[in-house]
Length: 211
Image (cartoon, rainbow, N blue to C red; front, side, top):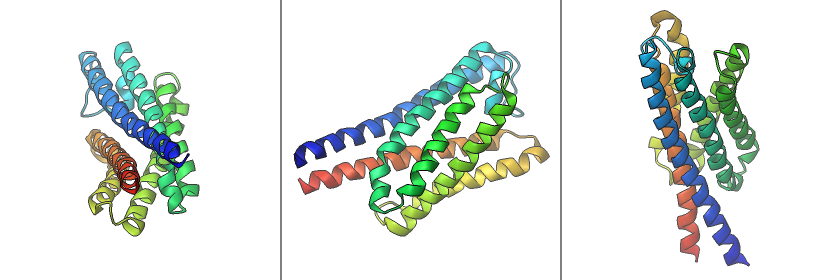
């Protein structure tokens, strides 16, 4: 029975990690293609943020919303499979609601498109930034304090993502540049991909050694 449970856990971990990889790849591909169509319709990367890909091109809108929703679902799967890791450290009571709200609000960014549901879009985007940033900081602190097997590099990426997000919000109105938002999003994606792989693959290695 123990062996069956371990095998099931192994499979769940693999599914979680593959979900993180798949979500990241599909998101990057769809958003990249969306930029091409939006640019052809007059989209200015220097001035407009990611959510504004939906404004001038229907194809770009479909690609952007699909990419965001798909990534949100995949991230939710990946983070939920990482719950046992935080449960062992008795930190799951904060991790779980933060992870769920972060992913659901991210899905909401795609569902409530900026061109049709501006107010709802702004609300869910704000919730995503707030909870996603808090989640990155919270998990980064846990890694530093309770898990010496995870390199400090991971936490640095998490803190950097939050810093860049805050920097974008503070400076957006002064410089009119949207690059910092893209950098922040890229750092968030990289952070969640790395920690998903580290946590889930570490669990696989530990369980295999125990066997």
